[in-house]
Image (cartoon, rainbow, N blue to C red; front, side):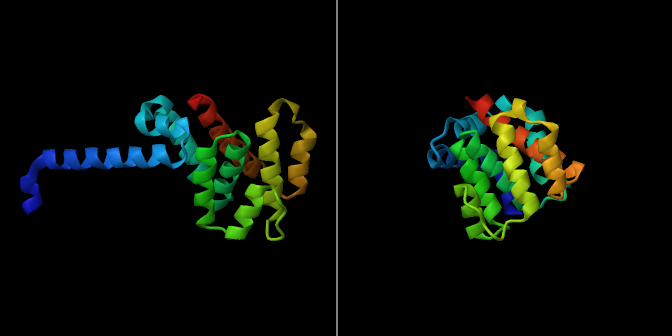
Length: 170
């Protein structure tokens, strides 16, 4: 095959060009320093954090990937990370109704929002803003809304991943 004759140097040049284009795209897109850090210094966050965040967002769960992406977007907005909020909002829209995602991101009630997800989002916001003020009563509210212990654990992991990234980036 002809491409084999080009050797590894062709692949390295192509990969380097792709990385340059990606850096230019990401760093201009939201204008947030976190995007620059993620793209230019992937070792800054490290493999353990990246593995943890990917597992929180895409690992096995009763929550769909889109629901967890919406949680991530809401938490990122609350943590004031516009880059993360936009990127996770876009991912949430891939599997959810656009008007629902828009309403949630604007803080408006939407009749199509599952009560379990509503309760989880409200808890994630409280956990982001004032984690030290949460009580057993907050967890009891989630149980009344139909969340299991595993559901709550997933919400906590998504929130932890999304609040860690902007703090570390800053």
